[in-house]
Structures are given as structure tokens and as C-alpha cells.
Image (tube, rainbow over the protein chains, first blue to last red):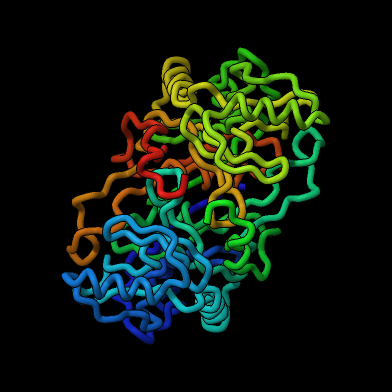
Amino acid sequence: MTLTVIPIDGLPEVRRGDELAVLVHTAADEQGTPLTDGDCVVVTQKVVSKAEGRLVALDPDDPAARRRLVEAESVRVLRRRGELIISETRHGFVCANAGVDLSNVEAGWAALLPLDADRSARHIRDALRARAGVDVAVIISDTFGRAWRHGLTDVAIGVAGLAAVLDLRGEADGLGRALQVTEVAVADEVAGAAELVMGKTARVAAAIVRGLDPTWRRDGSVRELVRAPADDLFR
Amino acid sequence: MTLTVIPIDGLPEVRRGDELAVLVHTAADEQGTPLTDGDCVVVTQKVVSKAEGRLVALDPDDPAARRRLVEAESVRVLRRRGELIISETRHGFVCANAGVDLSNVEAGWAALLPLDADRSARHIRDALRARAGVDVAVIISDTFGRAWRHGLTDVAIGVAGLAAVLDLRGEADGLGRALQVTEVAVADEVAGAAELVMGKTARVAAAIVRGLDPTWRRDGSVRELVRAPADDLFR
């Protein structure tokens, strides 16, 4: 089972109300890598937020305004260091600055996280089926830091048509013994794989991940990836 | 730039003293996907630990013995919950049970982390160059949990011939403004991508990641991925 990760180049600048399914499908066709059944399409948060109008005016030289915006997007602040705020969003994500991001948006504006990126993913998935007749999974990805490890990775913030966490409890290892590693965050690994072909400086906002295990297709949700605060030893 | 992730099937059961470079090279040849210059070979910790003799006898029904072993492999215990210990290893990794693992090893034995998985990766890389004439990067991967997010992902615990963290500080986003996301843990994303084709129940212990940006090739180290405790807001 070989996996192929194909960047989708040539998306136009996305504006409020744009139908991302159409933009992605057209761009994939035009570069000669049309979507096919079973693909997983990874779309970055930034273009989803733009299509959904999740932009707010923000003076980049007003740190107090930015702090207020981050706090408004948070349900709980976990740590502060200088201008950095690590907080929990209303989705249950723990990330820097509540996902409020000034990169790759016009000066004077900030992008907020989608209100419900599972819904965003389902919308793109449904639109691709209705308009292009392809049955694909969709992941909305964003770039988060981690505790303990340096550097950022892309993770899933919305999922449709794919398991977010693969539950292997009860299965056996290669020697017939019960597995210790039992729940694998495949949606996060898919988001990270897509990041490898998208980069941050190039304006590549989507990718195709082709060849995922077909048994992983189901109605997944990013909620599988959100650790309940009561289960979290580090919050 | 399309990325291809190819599982390497058919590795024999690995024993102490085995030369993993030879096993991986032979298996890749035999399945018709020979290694080529610029590939990144991902090898799981388990077979590296086996080849390096990092196995110790452990009665699986003696939780106190297991606890002592985990503590001996830790420099600092961060949290305990029931039998679970989250600790910092001497490498600086924060993970469950100090990486001591009973899956995919014979009953009565436990696998410990390699003493220096950067060195393990360099050894495989050098041996592949010397014996097979291919210039590849090597990542040693293991499966770790995360704070805040549910489910495990594969990450790099050793790196050779590849940047572990890509430093984009000073580069511009697609609109010519300074990037906010500046340091990307590409080695962790590569390890996670490889996990997607290896699985946990199949005995697939290596994969080829082909098509990584050639500018990422350099003398990387897992030390780039280890956040210093003083810089870590969650330790």
C-alpha cells in the first residue's frame, strides 16, 4: 500500500463565499491530477477561514487589541509568555494565540479558526460528491505547536469521511500479543504528511493524499482528537 | 513535488548484531522498490533496539519490576496515573513509560529505546552509502502520545542526513509578509507519514519516503526536536 501526497497548486486567492470544493477540483484537474474516489483532500485552515469569512480587522501594531482578540477566541488561557498565549479554544484545541493568525492574510486583518471545521470538511466532501461525483475524505489542517517537542506540525482541526483516531484495541501485534499502542491519530499524521508538500512560503493550500487504507473510511470527527481536560495530565 | 511513501515489507525478524542497512536494502530490492539517492528511510525504534541488543528480560506479570525499569530509564517522572508513567528520558524525550515497550517483542522481554538514535540513524545511513552506494537520509521513529490531543503519532527519535526542524525565520509568506509559523518539525511529519503505511499490527518496520525537498538535506539531529525544559511551558 503505497501512499502518494500531491500538492494542489494554482488555487486562486480565496474570498468569502467561494466554494472551495470547486476551486480544489478545478485546480487538481488543471494540473493533471484529478481527484479520484478514496482520496483524502487536505485543505489548510487559512483558505477555509477566508471562504467562510472568518477574518477580522486587526491593527498589527496594537498588541493589546491582538491580546483581546485571542482572549475572546479562548475559553481558557493555560500559559502566557511575553506576547505568546497558549489557550484552549471553544473547539477544545490547545494552541498558540487561539489560532488567530496574521500570516498569508492581507495587512490589517487576522484569520480566526473556522467555527466548526468538521462541518467545513463535510461541506467540501459533500460538494465534491454532488458537483464532481467523487467520494473523497476531507481534512482541514492547521499548524500547531506541541508540549515537550520543538517545532510545529500540521494537525487536523476538521475531518469528514475518515477515522480521525484509529482504534486498534483488541488487535494483536506481529507476534500475536495484545498491542500496547492502540489508538493512532491517523488524521493528524495525514495532515502532517500534506504539510510536507505544501510548505509555508509557497501559496499551496491543499493537497491530495492517495492510498490510505480503505478500512479507515467512516464518519470521523475531530472530536476524537480532542483530549477531554479531565483526561489530560498536562492542562 | 509529489511525495511517495512506500512500506518495506519482508524484513526478517531482527536479532542482535544484524546490520539493518543490509536488511532494509535487500528487502527494498526484493519488493521492486530499490532505494535511490535522496530517499528518506524511516526505520522503527523496535527493530533498531533489537539490532542493538536493547532488550531486557521482564516478567509481564510483575508491575513493580516494570515500574522499576521505567524509572531506571527516566531522568524525571512528570506524571503518574495508575500503571502509566509519563517521564523524561535521558535523551530529553517526554513519553509514556520511558519508551519501554512490550509489543512486538518475545514474551518475557521488553525493548528499551536506543541509547543514541541519532547515532543509529547515522550508522544505517553510512552503511547504506558504503555497501549499496545510495545517499539517503534516515529517521528512527517511535510512537508517542501528546498532551492535549488524543491518539498517538509516530515521531522521530533519531535523524541523519535531513533537517529535523526546518527554520523558516526571516522568510516571507505568500503575500510578502514575515511568516509567523517559522519552525516546522519536518522529521516528525515524515515519521508520521511513514506510520500511515506501516501500521501497528503488520510487521512492517521500515518505509521509504521519496520526494522530500532536497534543500532539507543536511546533518540534522533529533536534538533540534527536543525542547529544553527551561523553554517548555508544560513540564
